[in-house]
Image 1 (cartoon, rainbow, N blue to C red):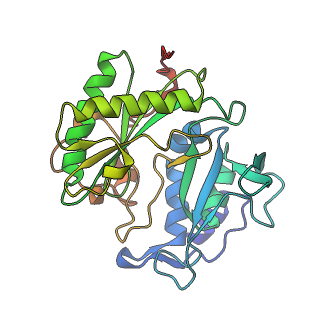
Image 2 (cartoon, rainbow, N blue to C red):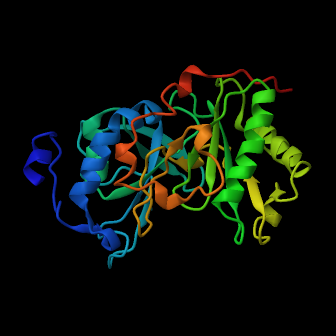
Length: 292
């Protein structure tokens, strides 16, 4: 496998036999291979977006802790595209990685970037979101099945508004619902819209909460709107997650959102066998929001 992978890219691949997921003995080489196979589905969605990485140099149970990385690391190849964005928090320029091609995606996997995160706007309009984001997050004993119930209520409400929602597993305990929109409003207005929908859902289901202070109430499902902010992110579709079973944040058809849904149904070994691509036409379904 190692030699075959090295023939596919100009990336200097190293330590491909290192175990990244001990439970299932998934190696770094298998992670690289996974991202190569999923590239046709991943690249169109993350194109022209500044990315944030979570890196696991020794795997999810390794001696070295994972770390969150925004700035392109020392030694980044010149052919890797970056976008300089000034951080008002750290008061410095940050060189974000922009992944528009297969070699860059392979390079990210070679960095042990098991998780890849994307914002809700592109580099040419960072202050104007082209995606609305709902994080449907169940608090135990609520389960992914409960999140599915809430996500279906959300879908119906969004369809009634003339919007086109897309759904994916988070790869952990919840679901993500995304709506493509024309990038013509501020994040502040977009966030207020998402929050308003969450508040309306609380009137339809006692299970739903829409305020941050209620997120840890047992058995509730939080319709989280807070990520709809500049340079806040979601894990990208088809990204791996740092779970024992090597789960994947997986785009679903709405027909798959039902009771019994489990994160472990969607892993590095099962997702590559899925023939469909529910998010294929994501950006062809952009809607216009009428916001005051």
